[in-house]
Length: 239
Image (cartoon, rainbow, N blue to C red; front, side, top):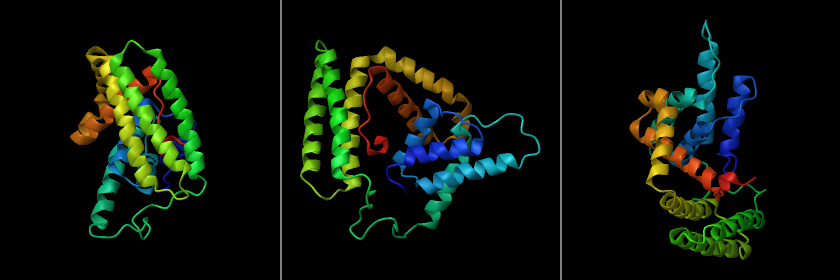
């Protein structure tokens, strides 16, 4: 898959098939993140989207337009199941001989380092805004130190393993999220979870429990990041 364009490729395909511009919702973004976390290849997601729209277009009566990517969820899951069954025991042809994905040449270590320096500056500003919150201070101090180390490594290398770097950034994002959850408190977390449950209510019966719980958790995490203005470090958000 195109390692750096997973989100935008899915959004573009959905908007194109729908036939008119429609920004996808936070719930849809949470679903895409769930697919990404589960390792569903980009081409499988796109295949599922197109199959869903093809089936919808073939209907004799189409009362309402498809307004959410959630409409395609079941078909993507079915396509992924077929994909997994077909690849049992097979090697990953998308990997290089050393087991790593080839990085997109337009994203050099220098470009990624510049992106991370921008996010580092945001984290440093956020750290100063809640001086009275000891947990917040400890979390951001740890995150800033670790991100500085990652940036230093990038500046001293001519090669790049996107998988390994993404794993480091994912751990760093998890650290930040844990700190934000602690600062937000139980009441805020419960409110956000109830909001997520309300939006997912119509789709719960069609989703496997692990997928439902992961999508719900991603929705809550997204709302927390928006509320506290926490930047995304993942390479998937590199513009």
